Length: 318
Image (cartoon, rainbow, N blue to C red; front, side):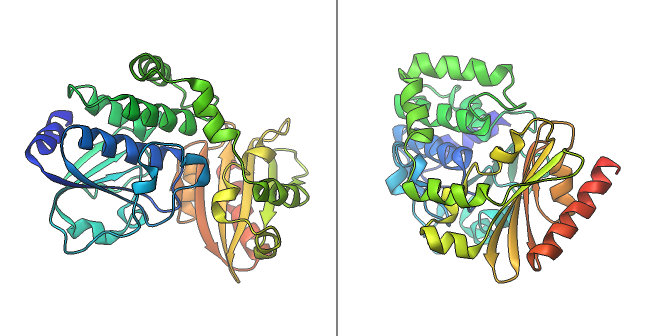
């Protein structure tokens, strides 16, 4: 599979690299890792995402070059879609944007939408799969690429705290620190110590909505459109909020309800391991991993909460 991808890279001249909307650290950092590597190899590359790069990831090299426009008339030799799970999360229009579509992903619930599908659900991050590819191409693992791959792994493993922090994650990180002369504090500072004041003011409002179930295993927080307007915060500022209720002693599943419309909510799930929230989200029309997943639901808040807890009780056998 890797050799097939390297052949397409060698043969191609124009590339489009994209990831899912509402991008996270792995999606953006993987996009920039591959983009910077292709440029180092002398290729013409367009990096694309439907949504802006979050503030916390703008320290990555090339982040200012990610475009929200993908010219439907452009004749790309290869289109890479990274970390998307399903093509619609990156944009179904990408199917016809190039001669070859390559899907690189690590989500357990995935759509094999590519002409080439390089998917490993055991990988700690999509960035790890990019590393596996680029390590076999001399000159591709530049310091800029190393920084991006390291960031992808750091972000998707929760700074090596989550269950996907497998031995490969540590091996790659160690290798990249050496290859790229990466300062881990600089990366951690960019990701976690450079927050907008709006985010903390929004977090204060969200924490006030904290609820814990009578059994003590489930905890929720809620973000309304009014809270977003009151603080001037945007969706990107809510990243990581769902981890706060998960850190409560005894809580197994944390849930964040974020209002996205008059009768619509984005629901984020985090698990400590006993409950597969990827399976839970899948049944609700979403997707994700065993310990981190999400779904979009329609209805008022009470209806959405009832739907989620009904499915959650089925998953845990309550």
